[in-house]
View 1 (tube, rainbow, N blue to C red):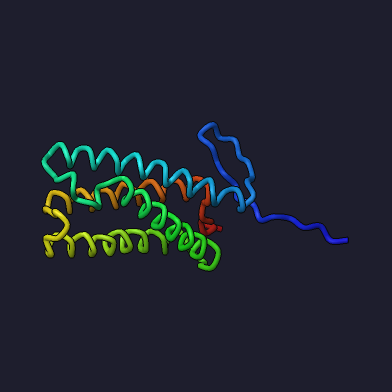
View 2: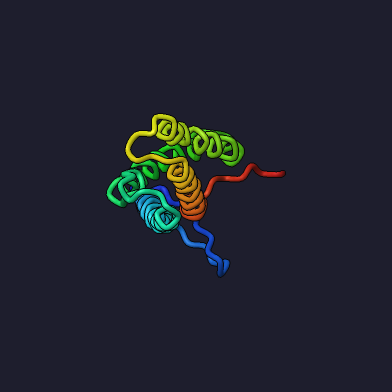
Length: 156
């Protein structure tokens, strides 16, 4: 009778030890970690923006709005990361280009909010949103690189 095995992800820890996590565990751990760190960072950015005068009525900087969007963004990022990781010959090279492009594209709705001036928007609020996108992307990339590492091309 054939044995069923789950794909695994090798995770390197700071202590130098290596352990294999089933991909079914590594993906949710990576997503939850990225969401938690991204939400904490965005909360700090929102607090700084509000202290600097951005209206508390600016809905994109309210936790109910940004936490939901962080979850959606990190889930989308995890899907993209996994697709690149599993389907591309040189995933590290592709991700080095793809991630910054996606982050820059994520600024487009923020700029549209600033240009429209809707929803108590100010350019200070828009800059805070852009900073939050960078923080969430950094949290996601760090988490994905830790728990869902990409294969480096061999130098043989």
